Image (cartoon, rainbow, N blue to C red; front, top):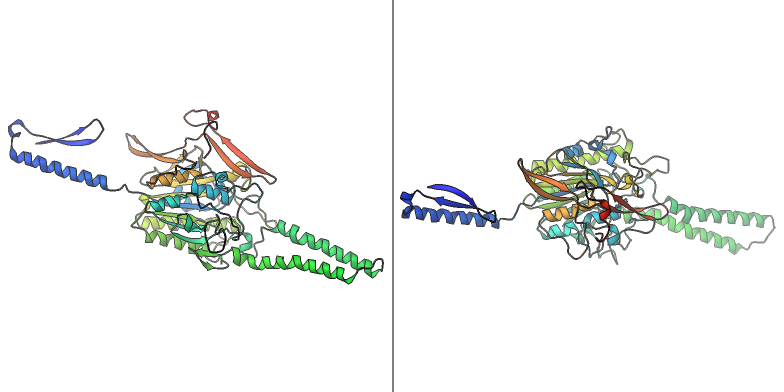
Length: 511
């Protein structure tokens, strides 16, 4: 008896049995043939009935981190060994771009794979982010996030850290924009964002508003009261007492709301939530990174038996800058460097848990920042915020390259070859179609989605199965903000296939 393989016209491998002529009529061999064939059919049916092994997804996003702040991108003074290890084990994207140079619109695009202007998350004024929990806006409930699609595929989903895409619509309990309403099973972190005003002694982001709404009017009133008092004392004019009373009441109307704002801003806007429950109000920055890291690793340990999506959205290195005692004063770049190195430690803890539980090979890990470093931010004492966008001009909140050029790292040990670099332009919006496809979900068909960018697909070659990263768009569209007016940035480039960039941007609608 001889076993031989036959490939049919459809490329399906089948098994055929051959017998010597002198045994072809043997009843025993015929019965054996039928039994083996039946066994092969059963095994084939069971193999087809088993679902494909879907990867776990871990998304790591820094806040206001510059592309020049990491060792794997050329920094030789900040210590980021864990992020460097992540890059060394996967692919580093050298032309990775954010959808916007501001937190709220960039994160909205990241979550949905759609340009911020299509979501109603791009402002036509200078203020393009949410600053107050009382804001009624947020990521529209009609939008589809990758968390929602993966949850429908049986993934356990969690967001640890910063949300910054709104909370409520009509009252303080509807939570219409809350992460749990957008596909996450678990949330622990900041519903808004970390601001200087959240940490006593770190300054304020409202200095300009304070000047025009409080200090300047008070100066005018002070000069007016003093002038009238002098003129009245010199008996040059008669000023009725009710005029002074009215002016002092006006001072009170300005000072009272100002003092209330200073007193209540922190507890009303800087608090920590677990799901729908406020856990700490106002938030304490003591060991905050350690607490969030513990939440992230606990989530991984709870979900070793099912696929999971973990989005760790770090508060570092947005001001107010902070770090624990273990990292304070340890870097060569002051508070900023301490915060970067503490975040790197946290990422190392997440990677270590994946290794410990044997999940690393089947886990796609992505690291990035929501936009470039805020290199133009200066404290009231004249101290620079910190951060490096390398050779790129500008930074957060403007439409120069430094505002949208961000680090991008992907690691999937069983799939992506280690030590790769990709120079094709990519976007943080590309993650949406990537993780949705990998999870086996269908992309939304009722809206324009950024579909043609960072897609993982296989190529067979003589050395085995190699995974490559493909970018097929020929221009990048960016909504940015200029100090005086909104601006749109277009980034043309030549594809490696030799197609002409001029052929794009005409005829096909933008996602």
